[in-house]
Amino acid sequence: MFALCLLLAGVGIGAYFSNNDHFLNGANLSISIVTLLLLPILQATQNRDGAALQAKLDELISANRRARNEMIGIERDSEDKIERERPDRATTRNQGNSE
Image (cartoon, rainbow, N blue to C red):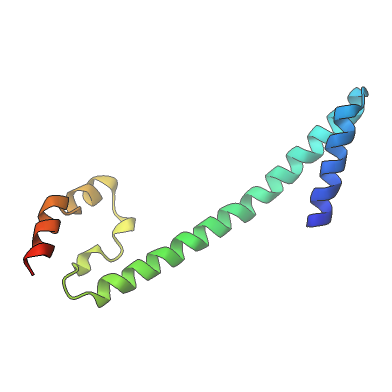
């Protein structure tokens, strides 16, 4: 993968210093293709990281006695429902200080 990136960097540098339009078009096309091929890899990594983060949060919610278990899996609900379920921050802070 590193060799491919190095090769593309060399093509890009060559295209910059060359006055040949065919070379520039080829370099532009190859860079665009590599970009499109890397996008699904990056997206899959972000999805996996997000799922891992949600699993960790669900575990913390279920382990905490004061936490509301209804919050587990809330990321699948609509945005309006999530906003209705959000606790008022001032109320949550005051409850935490009273115990």
